[in-house]
Amino acid sequence: MTAALELFSENGFDQTTAAQIAARAGVTERTFFRHFPDKREVLFDGQGTLSAALSDAIAKLPLGLPPIEMLRQAFSSIVEPLEQNRRVSEPRQHIIAATPALQERELAKHAALVHAVADALRKHGVEPKRADLAAQAGLAVLSYAFRSWFADPASGLADHLDHAFAELQNLSSAN
Image (cartoon, rainbow, N blue to C red; front, side):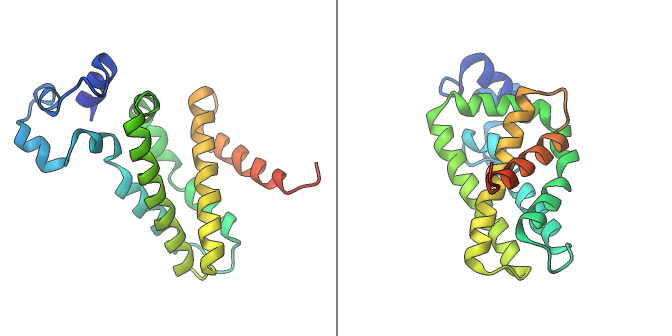
């Protein structure tokens, strides 16, 4: 991933080839394509791990919690690895923001993550429509927290996540 991020930052996503990434990483093109179906997938490599971690975290929660509280706790449980991955996730986000084809891919990956989280909520007893809405709202909160964290790295992701959930709560108040 580091080789790809460097090349995408230096040359732009569209101008970088899988062969260049493989060469920079010190592997053959064949090895590259064993790990990634195309160069876009390098940027979305951790999606399955994130999805599984969130699903597992939700499954371990006590029954009876409100869905948004389940999501707050599940997201909080993955803060540490996300913070450790900042050196990759921040430049990755800049590359995606600068590339329309990657923005489209990110939306598809985001939708798959929403589906996985909603499925985990349903399995944990949340009514299906409510699980879908909670997953969509929760992932919007997580995205908001990430953007805030990238803009203000002085505070940790956990602080930005707490603030984002508080803002979601405030949206339903009379203010």
